[in-house]
Image (cartoon, rainbow, N blue to C red; front, side):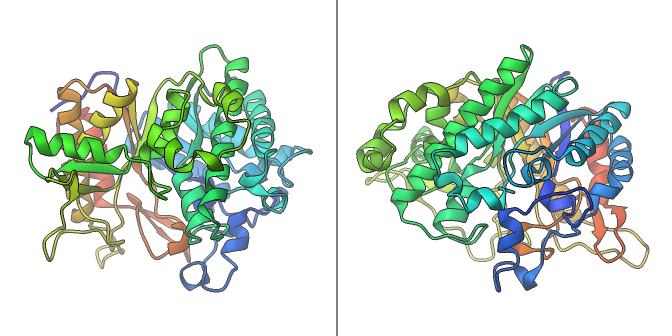
Length: 448
């Protein structure tokens, strides 16, 4: 069951979820600072002011990563920590934090994989139009320039953006994430286009600085898995994954075709092409930048079967297994997500997020027992290995998350970490899953 000899084993986090923003380094406000203070926006009005206090405790956390044995760590940089107003004056103290973080990682033989944007959009720029502004791609390029100029001598693995389906779809369309807007689909399409254009300009900036850069982006893998292993159901699941002719911000092809093929999906253009900015043709040349891999964030999948009227969703039986956040357990979602994405785009795959929320607490013996998470990871990694064995080039796996953290609109009510965090004391306690994953890494997957 061993994985390829050069397989990357890691964990992942995001800046707003762990760092804490109540720091003395001149950080600016983000849309999440605004949204978390909107009554009813987040669970019990929780916010990320302190979170896991990683800003002050990063050495302690990296020591745990070293104990875990990961070769790589995926983390994000806070845009408003670098530019408190979004653009203009660079906050050197903010850059110093990430410089020190990267130096500490390298001193512990851990390779940094940097995500430039994981949802904490500068509030000042939101007030200037946010992702609806045609200037937003240039704002993001300026930010990228500052980061690569400062960190690029030690970082060459880059993700431009993380899950645009969430910060555009949940944030601007459904209104359940920051900034909490509920816009028409026409505006959502424009914001999506400018976000992808920002990706393209960001990738250009990175390439201009680094000839050896590895660049991708992390997208939500909205996976359809076949109800049975028959060719008919497999084809139905594959077909359903690539539809983009409905007002669905979680469409897979909408967010990947322009970046890789340089064109929007035909069914999307037929349905919604009128909403795109008039500069689309020129923009697509920028959006389509060479990518070294596709990052997939996959936690679950929907079950699809063939029917006389086309691919059909199959309801789950009563009492089906689910996580604490009520996401269904889907053993083969990594397997088919990786396969279907590689088939369509012919790029290597990296699983950039995968994990589960569980009802964890420190027990009387001082330990955190989370057998459900171990079983979840075991099932999904076995599925990922099946994809690799079938010829899908999967190059790495980043477990989500290294530690319990601020789970966005869910506040601190959901625990995804393999390290338990007591938010009142900030005490870290590795869970049983931490030690299970440690064995997996040490054996390069043979232990599963």
